[in-house]
Structures are given as C-alpha cells and as structure tokens.
Amino acid sequence: MKRFLVLLQVAVCLLAIPIMAGCSDDPKEPAPEPGPVGELIDATGCKNKDRSEDPPVLPSDRGYLFWSYNADTGLLRVEHVNAGLNCCPEYTATITIAGDQLLITETETEGLCRCLCLYDFAFEVSNLPIGLYEITVDEEYLDPGDPPLEGVIDLTRAEFGTIQAKRDHYPWEMPE
Image (cartoon, rainbow, N blue to C red; front, side, top):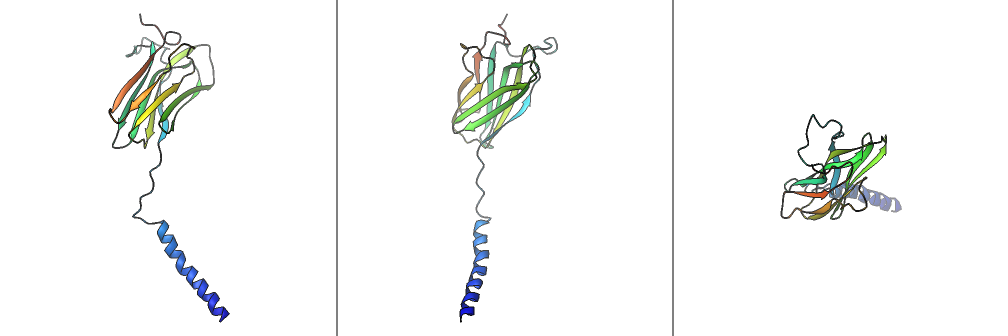
C-alpha cells in the first residue's frame, strides 16, 4: 500500500509538470513591452576645422536640440547640434531615461588637445510612450552663467520641436 501511495504521488507530479509549463508559455499572452531605451546613433567630426568646405547652416552661437517623434512606433529622435568638446577627444555621448526625465550626457574620456570644436550628435529613444518629458543636456564647456540646454517635450501635442540656448564664448562664436 505504501508503494502504491508513492507511485501515485510521482504520477500526479509528472502529470502536473506539463500543465504548469503550459501556463507560463501561453502564446495568447503577449510578452511585456520593454521600457524606453536610448542610444547614440550618429556623430559628426569637428565642425570647426575647415569652415571653407561646408559653411554652417545654423548659427554657431548657440546649442540646439531638434526632436521628432513617431507615435505609431514610439521612436523619439533627438539631435544635439553644436555640442562643445575637445578637438581630439575620445568621448562618450549617452541619452538616459528615468520616468519623465531624458538626460543627454557628453563626456570626454581622453585624447585631449589644446583646442575645442563643435560636434553634432544624434540619439534615438525606442519604446517611448506618448507624454510630457523634460530633456536636459549635460555639457562639458558651459561657463557658470550659461543657460542650460533644456526644455519640455510635449509628445501629446507635437511631433517635432526645437530647444535652443545662446552661447557667447569659445568654442561657440558670436554672430558677425
């Protein structure tokens, strides 16, 4: 009788395993959407080195953030135009998302020369839900009185926009 009870318990366990495994792999239940993820997708070289080749389309006396959003795909594209960094840097440029805060951080790591340049960086944030977001750029060469390059992106009302901040010192230039 004892042997029968042990065999019955083993049989019940063996039958329960496929039932429990089937519940966790239910094809009718979609996988949860991943949260927003940001990445650097493009960067220019130093824009100051040869001004005769390609004159700037935008004034170099300010920093710009251009953004566009596709509500169907949840993709936000952000371009930071005129980011001031060293002329020969090795740098990191990241965009991070924490709740309704977007932070662009541009940091030099090594390879420093005795000059500064302006660069452009392009970022993408995928899986970003529609909403209001505060965006801030953490820049290396701002003077203490410089306004930060920051603002609010309202994805409930617009598909694109611009944020800008005036700069009046090297490597940004005063308009002529």
